[in-house]
Length: 239
Image (cartoon, rainbow, N blue to C red):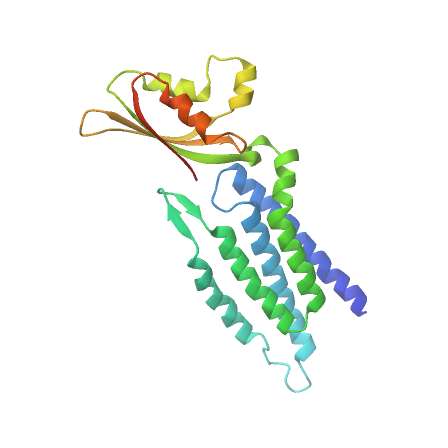
């Protein structure tokens, strides 16, 4: 009976990984902060903690004490660790957020500790393998076999130009409009966000968020923008 029970619990953890993967793909394609690794880690760890909570009732309840809650302290641990995870989440450049996967790993580590303390050794071992697989292996596989948007990264670009009417030409140069298909395939840059403003000295500033291939060299983007007429300064930063 215990053998089949363990099989069912492992199946639940596997399904939670799959559902977390589906949510992560949807979020990452839409360039949301919650990506593949974060969603899978949260989903697997949440499933593990739920399994521990449910199974502990049957394992530790005795006749006359069926109303006990052996997981009440564990619930407080999970809540407390949530504040610890929040400390590693950083907000940069307006809406750019980093540290979500790290925060999820911290939270899942607490879930694993609770599971081991409750005696769920097999489930904890399987869950940690799934979490490591989700963080290190699956994203690399999807970059090879998945849509191209999953193998791109965001780059913040700030360009200061002399007053002119060439901003549209700058955008066309970034997107490689009017060039051959071969060049477009090699460069493959798309503009996600754009912000224009006038500086006090009369120059014009353009802030861009670009989606570029992961193998794209930052220097290629820098020199491509630097050689455009009327461009004064270029700042490029990986997000």
